[in-house]
Length: 342
Image 1: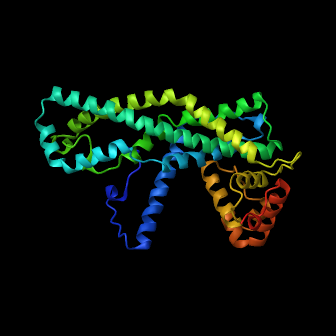
Image 2: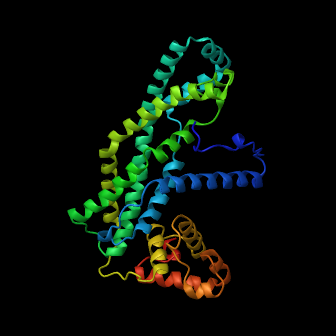
Image 3: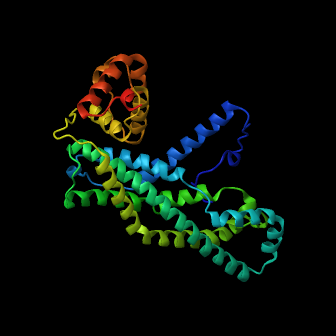
């Protein structure tokens, strides 16, 4: 759809044999790396929100929760049902549509593209609003879990709950236009036979193609983003629903011990959000967080002195020490062990 949206392998000239596990996995790894690059860029474009000391969480920790929810949002991209059948018709009539658009007077073609842009913007906005609501609910759930652990309580007075609402709405609104536009690109797909502009390859120059492309996509994006802005009350409703449910389901003993060491804090926060992770998975997740926010989960200094530059490297070299540290953090934070959760 646009430069910067999620692309599939064929656009890069990759030939993937679906019967080869190695090739399929390699293609998936490339796609995941591309997604991470897009999310990282979108997050860099949005300034980090100020620290929320009332919730007991640092800026980097909120950014980590933001990262997890943003990935889930992108992974939810799908073509709306109303457009699926319509796109199939586009594909079946591809050659006919190429001729039709190529011979159509410019004024009529502009009118047709404007009508198409308005229709598809409305359908995509409705679907994306729902996807943002789900992602916001996921964000609210993770944020509430982390706040409960840090504060040692699960009763949030109105003033504190408003802090949670502010973070949740900040997350939801930060998706538009950046990741929301990329969500559309991923759901849209890349088959040229399904494009609303089948005639582009008939135009003589790149400049003509860009000009024609703008006639559809500029009004589409403008109308899509405008429609999304009206959905914030529904996003807040979903956030509040998930906050209330998490408070109901959570166990929060008074005066739960909160680690002061940054490494242990990072482990405690991660286990709060994903308590079933084993030690190796914890290390892998912490390394990913350090990629987004360097030193948000620092490797303990004693392990660094022994040559471990990352959590996963420490796990490979000092597995027993790593497992002991994670086990102690679990115990002090009141998070059941993996075995007890199975």
